[in-house]
Length: 417
Image (cartoon, rainbow, N blue to C red; front, side, top):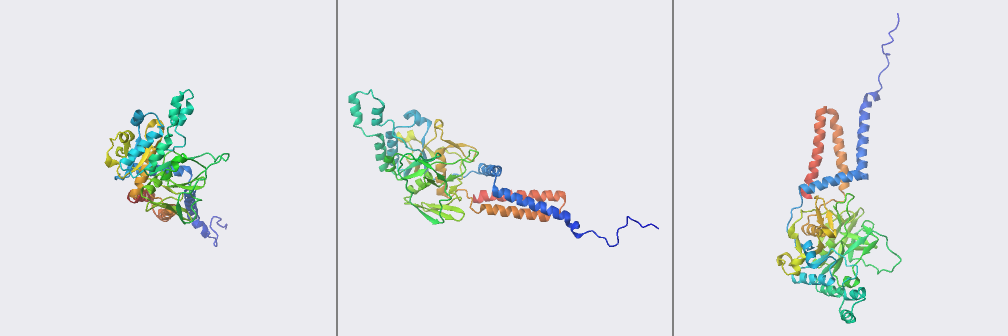
């Protein structure tokens, strides 16, 4: 009688690990996926940043900041003002007249989103130099007149003016002697902030005669994101290794009579800037995320209305004024997250409004840790629950998890900025 070869051996059995092998494979795949997601979040490639910024912009477009009146006005060099007073740059004597008018209107402080780096080409001495054929009596008469910078200097001595400075991307020119820059008066609380602050090798300054008459100097340069949109604004930068406040923060400091400011830093970077009696939370580089409103005409007071005495005094008395340019031909128009274009000076004005109303958007230094924790928790929940659910139930549960995470994100934005 032949034995049945197909019958299993009496002592044979399936190894235990084979029974659980499919589950182990699935577990390893799931863990690999989770770690891949965590790695992508930590590395933060450009495509992830673009997606995050797109969602961030959409939130602001759905719910822009609600405008509440703040004592900030834009003194606007608009198209009509250029038509009446001529092409830019205007003579410094006209700027001096504007500064005097603003003082008469009771403006608290004026910040310039403009830099006066070169001598006025319309100063009497420059007119003499540029026009060799002038009659001698006319040359002699012009030589007795002060340069236009003197008129602007004298106006600034009678009014609190913050001059604007801008950064330059070129490397420092060591072939020429330059006046040593001084640090803006500030205190350091905590760690050394200098490794984290944005640094620029060069600066475009105002003429020394104007710098000496100013009440402060602030940097108006703003860096765009790779897609060209301005989402973050630095409150503090370093130029030639020296610390400077942004134009917005410096103008607020001067307007409130503060002598200095403080930089708060921990081991992760900057925590914030204390200025004008406020501690303003920043990211680790010293940037803030302005919460923008839609453009409003009542922020603007045209220059020609001020020079002609037709401006509403209630719009200016006791206010911070920022002198800037909205005329399209002068190309100071910038894109913001609301999907609109605004003059660069309006960004600085909205920053001051944010600082006065405590309405900046907040992204603390520990945000990345929260996001990593959320990825891990959601992944574990899905990993533990999905195997026991059917296909449709698993799909619904996964979709609900994603919707819930999105709802949490929107709630954090809409309720807590």
